[in-house]
Image 1 (tube, rainbow, N blue to C red):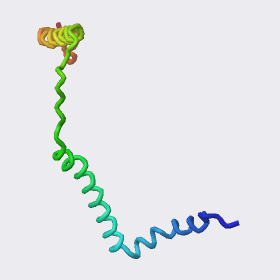
Image 2: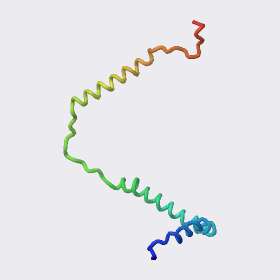
Image 3: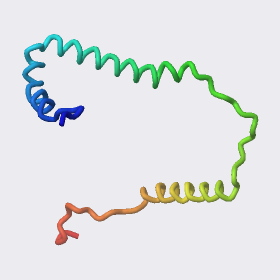
Image 4: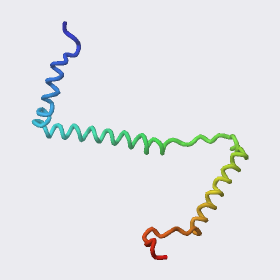
Length: 102
């Protein structure tokens, strides 16, 4: 029974592939270079060129802020600010000082 993919032929081809690529090293280099340029060009187009051409859509809706969540956030940041400012005033024990010399 003959299948669409003959695994023995595929296996032997994959074993010989590095040898074939080494024999045609210049052609392999050209193909891989062109492939790398195509991938780089696609990435450039997708993430730089295409984004510059798209204009943002401005909706007419007003931005609404939940005041309770906003107050929680402000309290959290104020608490962090107080902790940060209090770190300068805290005195730490010298880890290099001998316990005998006090």
